[in-house]
Length: 193
Image 1: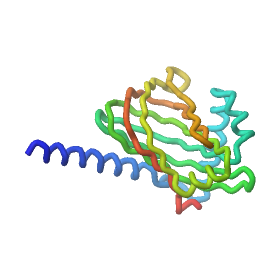
Image 2 (image 1 turned 135 degrees about the horizontal axis):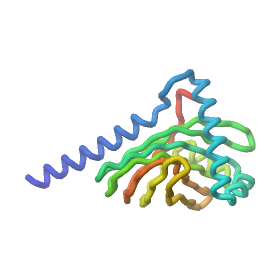
Image 3 (image 1 turned 90 degrees about the vertical axis):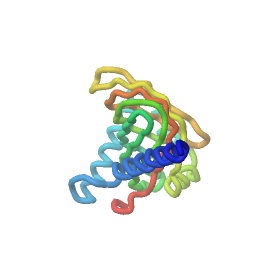
C-alpha cells in the first residue's frame, strides 16, 4: 500500500514539473508576433554582449562557429522538483536564417530557489546546428549555487564543450541552491517562424 502511494506522489511531481515547464515556455506575452521576434533578437544581442564581457574567449567561439543559439530561461526549484522555461533563437551564420525556439525544463532533485539565466550555444558544424533545431533534446545533471541580484552577488556560471557544441550559461538574477537531474527540451516555435 505504501509503495502505491509513493508511486502516485512521484507521478504527480513529474506531471506537475512537466506542466509548469511547458506552460512557462510558450511564446506568450504582449505584442504581435513581429514584436516578439524583435524582442528575441534584441535579447540575443544583449546575451552575446554580456557573454563576451564575462567570458572573453567566447568571441573566438563566435568567429569559429557555423551557427549559434541564445536563450533566456527562468528556473524554479521547490524541494524535490524543478521546472523552467523560456525562449530564444538559433542562427545559421552562413545563411543568416533565424529559427525562433522555446525551451522547457523539468527535473527532480534536492533544492530550493529560483533563477533567471541565459544559455548560449556555439555550433561548430552545420550538422550539429541542424540536429539541434530538428530535435533539440538535452539531458543532464545540474548542481549550482546562485545568489545574484543586479550587479551584486555571485553565481557559478560555466561552459561545457560536448562534441561539436560549446554551451555557456550565465546567471542574471536569482537565489538558488540545487542539485537536480533534469531533462531540457528545445523546440521550434511554430507561431513565430
